[in-house]
Length: 370
Image (cartoon, rainbow, N blue to C red; front, top):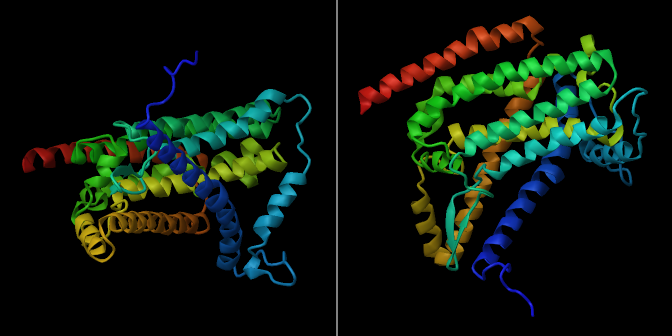
């Protein structure tokens, strides 16, 4: 006789379907859109800022579309390129490291909300994969795991330059993860929660956005996030003029592409956190969620009004993310690289004390207001 004990309850099936849709959406958006597009933007933006043409040769039937076909040509080249493992390297760890760098960047999106809660035909939809009470801590935990990918890559490559890059990654990540966590403590104090969903929901009013309540924390967090991303001006772990390519010097083909992709996906993650914590998440300035819903419901009815409200909020969130991505990409080609001692000094002697001072000042102001 068939045992039905372990079958999901009927009311759980819609929730499972909804979760799968959100997972597929986030995965497709990051891997299928942002990762290849940012690879193109990285090349084209640097060319324009350096008065060059940039990628423009790949074409289909004579059409280049401004070099967009280089996305496909690069993918084909990396797929067919030889996967080289150096003599003396640890083959298992050398192969595992790229996956350890990519997966945590995708895991972070499990708790980042890209919309609110909507009632669609009697079913409440919450636009976040996992609505955890400690969502921001989960992001920090997932982000710290990516460090292992870089460290393992440098150690397992049997290359002195890679090993030195791995040592720099370990020390730099340790330095800035401490400060980055402290930069958001003021946000937790203001919104009384660690849940990213509740922090985002608390920013419906324009002047309740995190940038107005925690301006110092915002700028400190950007500096720490750039250091965690290992991009200019904090790219000492992979400084070309010093370490060839740092911890992934001995990688080629798809494994090299995975490290490259992890770097771009970290940019998307940073932009999403900045939007969700400091810039109102999916909220539209001076337009409340209820006002938008009532306006659309008056035209299309309640269910379709809720659906269009959800689509508008999702579009607003990703538009803000795209704007921050452009800003972060701009920094890459605007600032010179710091020396390694300057990176350490900035983290321990400047950002860390400022983040602690921000916590103290925030606490005093909250006591005075209350």
